[in-house]
Structure formats: C-alpha cells, structure tokens
Length: 111
Image 1: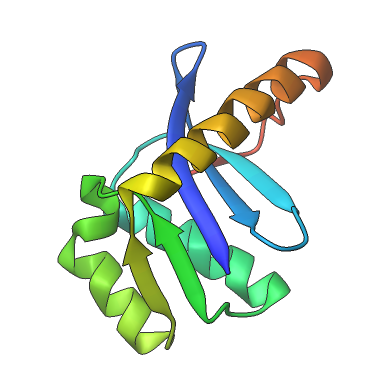
Image 2 (image 1 turned 90 degrees about the vertical axis):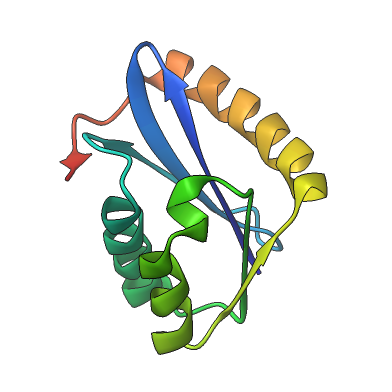
C-alpha cells in the first residue's frame, strides 16, 4: 500500500509518495499541482518500484479528478480516499519538512 499527499514548503509545492510498509518515501518538487502532474509522477514512481495494489490519499481535487480515476483503473490499483489517513500523512509530511530543512531539497522539478 502507498499513501500520497501534496504539501507546501517555503512557497513551493511538493508531492510525497510513501510506501506504508517499508516506510520508503519519495518527495518531488512540482511546478504545478494539477492531476496530470500528480499522475505523471506517480507513473514514474510505479515504473521504478512496481504498482501497488492500493493507493490512499485525501480527497484533494488532484486525487478525485477523472484523470486520476482513469489512471487507477488503467494501472489496476485500488484508490482509497480517507480522512483518517490524512492525519497520518500530515504527520509524515511534518517529518518530511524537517528532513527537507536539514538536508536541503533536490533542485529536480517535475512539470
């Protein structure tokens, strides 16, 4: 299972994708926060690490858009939205912000 969320830090937008079991986390700086941008990055992650059976997110517009629903169907994973998960994701996001401050953020930006 993978959890995903968008967050802002120092006026920049980031996408976090975290494997729920291994605790592996990827964070990428985004120029836009459209559903298409989120889908393209998720495809990149899944191509490198495999397609999870379940992806959880909040009910943000990027994750409830038709484009994201079609992505989930085509790539054959179950997309679950849950407000309960939002709290866990936000805790991870706060932790990730602390790490970003400590190590700096990659200049690699996805469009």
